[in-house]
Length: 222
Image 1 (cartoon, rainbow, N blue to C red):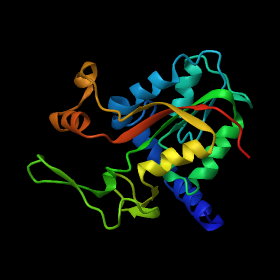
Image 2 (spheres, one colour):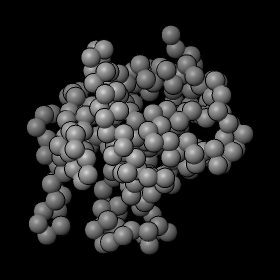
Image 3 (cartoon, rainbow, N blue to C red):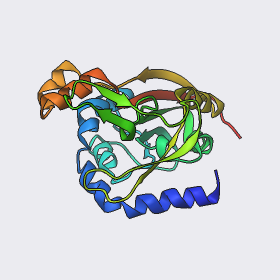
Image 4 (spheres, rainbow, N blue to C red):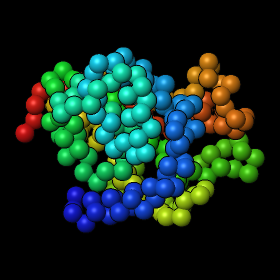
């Protein structure tokens, strides 16, 4: 990771902050509400009385919900939550080591990030909505910075960093964590009624937008 890449990412998120607030709102966007937030809360468990770091908090919607559930904010944390953050950081290894540093031994990290196998910015939906294709201009196993075109009300390209799923696992292990649980969030039957239309329901049922990890800090790392 270069200093230039880090500054580019900071500038990008500062530039789209207002648009991102519109996208996420107070309760998260549709993917979070329908698919990944239920898994995130299951992995996080009861946060009442715990010290929790919302790493890469964005608009802060999740921090507000953590506070409402009784979590405390302090300098030594029981839980780190990174909700759709890791695909946007240029230095994955350094980020995971930072999570290790602020967590107590035995503390938990709950990580949700875009599924690297199914990048939504590269999805092409057929005219009849029956098929979705993911177009790759590079090998899945390559690590690289990507820029996707703006969509919806956004006016700027989206900068993100592709890594194969195995690289995430290796980075977690190298940073002193053990994987406790793993899921590919999808809409569950008890939440079908929250889908706004058949297409949204079908998308949530048939392919994962994200992956979710529950990690435990086993050892300190330098």
